[in-house]
Length: 262
Image (cartoon, rainbow, N blue to C red; front, side, top):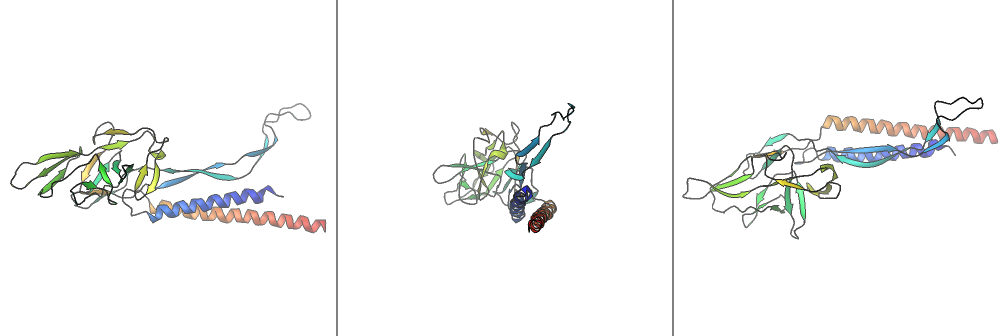
């Protein structure tokens, strides 16, 4: 049986995965804080018919070998943490990170997650929470009668209360970074979960130790470039078609061989 049939089949499967990944990127072009992912491929094992450097019948060294590959496989998806565009909203509790870092939130069971989406809100008790209700860590509580709230670039939060002219500090927002942010596990809902591949979290105030600054009243948009994704989509479609033609060519060769036998 021709190797080309199986080799081309792996190519078609790889392009299917690439289109799936591209479609997800395009679908999240307007998702706050979304980071596009890139599918990584590697070639499969090779059948070695002749080792490089072997000698021919006359004792001369052959400079090249004879190896036939068996196709391609997807080895992983790399999330690209390049910055997205800043979108001004004017909302008091919207925050964008200019530079490296993640917000840390906790669910009701205290399980930590990380996010770049800074569209925060106040819950019924005045605590800052993410869009899905997860509590910001470390927690910050805003008095319900506060007339204004200011979030500075360094993460310090101050509020002005009725009858007062001077604002008072009510908390400090912390950011977190990782040696390998691409190793975080995507949990959906703009949330990431810590894995061993990401390394140990490094906590600090915004603007220190390589962490980015905060911008109140802004949100970070998706870093997806539609034109780039469309090019990837077209390239994957054409590669899929070429692999299917290779299968058709292999089938025609087998058909010709069958006719010769007859």
